[in-house]
Length: 351
Image 1 (cartoon, rainbow, N blue to C red):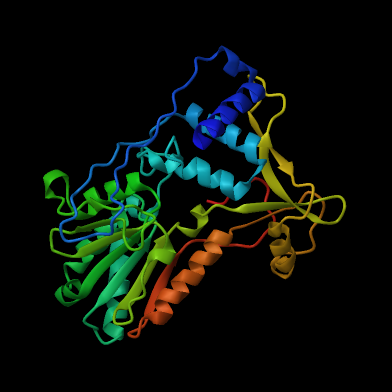
Image 2 (image 1 turned 90 degrees about the horizontal axis):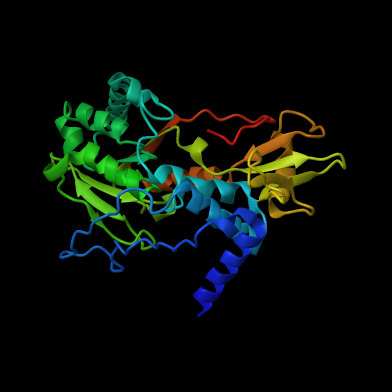
């Protein structure tokens, strides 16, 4: 009954916010079928099937955002980014095809395999410098289509000792992309040997597989789910990863103080106007406290209209990287594949 009441309130709010909804046939709420086991991985865990792509349309996602804001108030920019990137209704990374020559953007591994080979040789040299320990873990943050890891594994084939010691962990928030990565890294079609899936909210990996050479591959949705390995050399690579993290934005006002930018409803949407708009929070929010504490890192004294953007998520991910590296007795290191800067911005939402 509570769920029905919430849904009824959401539908009523949408009719109030967008008068065009009154002329639109009522929509049926489509829920994602359960594809994950609630039990952790076990010896006899059955393989499960994944839905292909989003379970809704961009209009469904917009309706969800409008209802959420109407009920709970404006969203932080970080919450808005999280929704539009990963919401199963129609999030950007829920579908495939964003990366590559025919997609929206391209990264170095997609341009030439030389990039992956150079990173792979660097990893092998770090392993040799550490005394060639018997266990080495390669952790990639945000593997995209799996192209970089595919290039790394091809390079490792030239170093049998390293390949024998190797295991692979991947950080991927998108279930859809994790499936594409498995196809790329572990084989195509019937050649895929793993593919087991469990509820991503449970501890441990949500997907397990292995390469054709028998290298174990585990997928995690968040950095804090990755266990520490004290006996393994830990090598971490993250190409264009931190700049995809949701960000908070703050604007310096004429009153000489910071106020957080939020995403709110447009009270008078028209065909040529968006349904959502940026607004400034009326009062101090926790994000403002963080910005005030970081003013010594800013490029100079702020002026009216300056916008400061930062990502608590990216900061936490850096701490998680440090945790994993410091726990590894044989040592470890990270290849920095992100360009970071501290400056006032015009329109950036990172990336």
